[in-house]
Image (cartoon, rainbow, N blue to C red; front, side, top):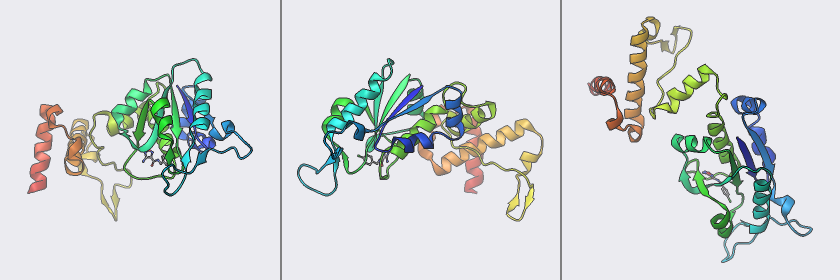
Length: 247
Ligand SMILES: Nc1nonc1C(=O)NCc1ccc(Cl)cc1
């Protein structure tokens, strides 16, 4: 999979993606990341990439032409059809289902804005989808792009080893929150490890973990809990958890 980053700080995103799972996926040839800086396509000796907002108001707006030239340079760099994504708080919320959909694309061009915004005409004509990683305001789209790259890269075949894949599944695989995790020491001033995890009873351990995932999702993120899609066993486990909780 190929990622093209259109940004005034392309090296910033590439650097974030150079570590850990994503860096390893790159080393394995599972993905590549290329940076395109609109400033390299800006005219004049000041090489402007932004200008005052029409209608007044604070801050600056990114100009159409340098961004458009950078996007087109990225498009032409590879024959595969490209989807252009713009990261901004005004976009559709990124979730694991969307990440899975994006992971199937041969390449993605990620437009990272700075300042107060990007000229809307560029967004309307060059952007296929506007995506938000959450309802808060960052200083630019680069960190959001790095988040998207990380989540999408993990889903590339061969990016994760078996253990990592299992963790991936427990986190977002079935849409529930993850269960709690413990490691040594078994006894600690902060408390003990739940007995069931020390029992060696693998069915009991799996049952407890599933019940914790269900219970936590119910308590913390009921919006994620689609009770309709729960198995009969899930509903029994959740019912037990709720009774104990409400005692
Ligand atoms: N939340 C988010 N999810 O995706 N992106 C964000 C975000 O805050 N971007 C900052 C940003 C985006 C565009 C421009 Cl022009 C300036 C700053």
